[in-house]
Image 1 (cartoon, helix red, strand yellow):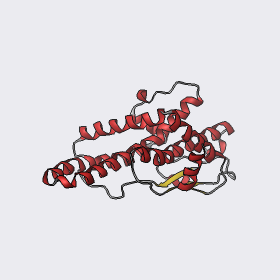
Image 2 (cartoon, rainbow, N blue to C red):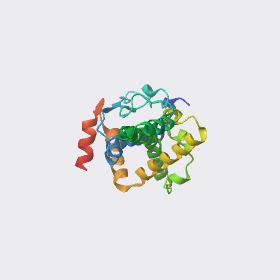
Image 3 (tube, one colour):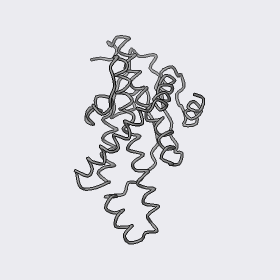
Image 4 (cartoon, one colour):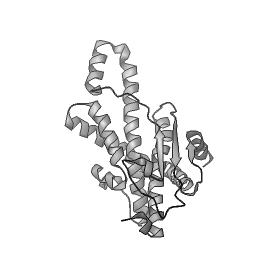
Length: 221
């Protein structure tokens, strides 16, 4: 379907969906990182001006075509291969390295949870818009692809591929982190923060919203 054939209602719904998706990521980077005692990390939200278009295209793989995208925000820049097994071996050799290993593991988990919060936030907003009760426990991980989660899930699996070579352990870990993401958006204060930022994105005429702007907005509400 050509986007310029979309109804105003459909375009509005898409803008809402993308705004909640990216707001979910951004709020998670701020609040989930802080809750897990992780350091602040740079990110920015890039907005695309779509006022001259009949609509805008939605591509979770090529985010250049999205209304908004979060750039940056990851705690880990270089993944360690087979980190779960390596961590146990290193700690058994030298217990003094244990705090550094645990710090990496927390950062690892935090990044993956932040990735999952984006599509989960979009899913919750979609349910609310349709006047349906939302329960993340009833959503299959694969279903996140229906909420713009293709790229997020691909990156999450990239992390999990470095977590362990055992597919079962990968799946168990991802399910564990999915629950953490679901609990995050189920928290009323976190959801209010996501909603506030999403509404700001929908109505903003800025091209860039910095992490400082996001933090200021969250602190003011």
